[in-house]
Figure: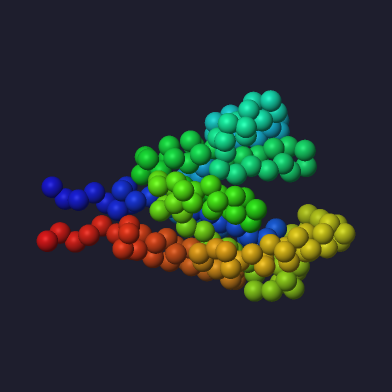
Length: 210
């Protein structure tokens, strides 16, 4: 009887972080589309569902009191409040999918990544699975050009984003990998190389049969 495929025995918890406009949403979408065994962790939020969104598919929609109870119970690996709405990643959501043999993808900011690194440090299941990747354009100038080309923000908002981005990019050294973003195709190729390398690490690789 052949040994189990390493994909099912050593799944990864993949964190991708980037400054605003850095391309992480596109990269995550590409990864999910091209790698069926990679699944995203469904996050909780206190904001109301938008048209077409479904509970348990797009988000877990919670009221503020339920969210707070979960925070106090220590259920979240990371959580934050953005523009008056709270968002969080449940430890149970991540562990459940890892135990199914799936690689779990989290698209979060640098603060969320730092919180998860702290939370998993003493966790014997999550710590060995964690792989963190920071994605960023080659320079702040290129990032600013991307934000302008995107056309979603007025100049003052872009400058605010750039100020935050400068602080976020400075955190790249805390991640396992740095991907300098060039194109959608190349970013995906490099991300695939990271996953391939992590699957072949001694601690995760399926040993040869003797």
